[in-house]
Length: 573
Image 1: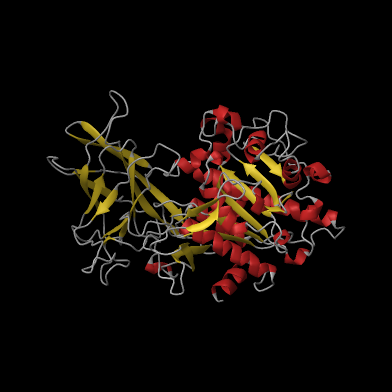
Image 2: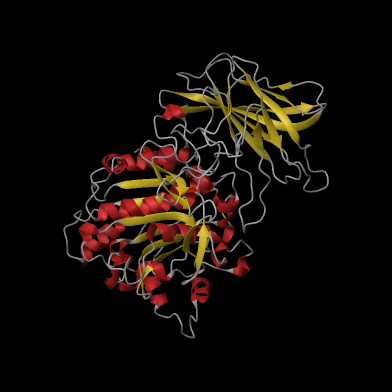
């Protein structure tokens, strides 16, 4: 029920999707899911020759990412039959005359099922669909007339590499039919917005879609094979190679709490649902710091010149049993300012404008973030760009602010700078701000990067705690990155967890994210069949673990009883 309640919390937002999603993606009159659409060969989840021969070995691999090439040869059997059972293209324009009722229950975007993709594959290299580009245009996956970013047309992109490492097989691989794919392509606007403003609603709805369509695939297979209802319970392993640098990072964030709720509620008509996420790539980016309110210590916050976007930093108090009556306050000291500026919050759920000599320089928001048996105080500081975007638009000067908190001694305060850079190929974006600490050293005396915080440095800028904010759930599997050799030293960028979480700092599992220090990236498929790319980061370590879990489940080497049993068994291998 908690998963359903959390999804229901987005109800008001769903009513106002016209202010969030691109207008031509909206389904203004969604209908209830119609299972009769599954009964026709045209709209089946899989063509007959893609049905797993032994359902006891079948595992569904779910991927939520950007612009996944569902017709790629490595996602087919012999290049003619789709292994992708369903793909929800969240950023595609709705079909003005949808076939049957496929995707009619979705609030935006367009869905394709396996049989539809197989039908399109049969038309490839003909006058109707002369190449893969024309296939993607015919389905709305690529549409240059819409004026939005068409990342599916990139020769290489994040989603193609991730889905390949998670679920790609050679077309004649005998094991390939055991791993049907469920996919959700996020809108390009979500990938472009590294602040993650609207990513929770798209990701949470994507998860619900994968779980629902996997459940429907199980029921469809039962009818197809004339088996008893409820007898097919395919496990679902979901890969999400996305993340943020700021957030509670204690399991109470929307994404991680929702995923834990979904995993904990193992249904009677589906196998365990397991989530695999990357640790993140922020270890050395100086985006995490710790303040001790019992001292006069401050942290520097470096705002970059020529930054066209606002910058955000969060201050998270320690866990408290109850909401305090005397709120935490923020103190900021700007370069060349006559005096520090201090907030004067009287209650949680309010904001204050920060001014220096009558000029607005930022806004601070105070919230109470509830969690199990209490909660945490949160102050979010937002400042304007450092370069005006138009005449008269607000902006501030670049430079280093000194920031601290003023509060009763209620434990350490964790400071997280939100990601604010540009994603390659998407344009826009800002220049990443970061924290400054005189005691922090990037390199040791030999010129090597320092990968761990020196002993005894529990405050100041920290490498620990740089973990992806989406990846702190209790049932998730978190993956760090390493070099691809026998020793597997950690990749310098691979983020670290927090020591007080009781989990391995480098990640629950570590997988290659670079071939070597001299050869960055792992080789994976590009957007078109036959193409290749080198993609790096923990985003590519993560799907390798997703794939390994699916393979072990298929071979009966992991228990398909509950996500916790599965996770514990896998981590103990």
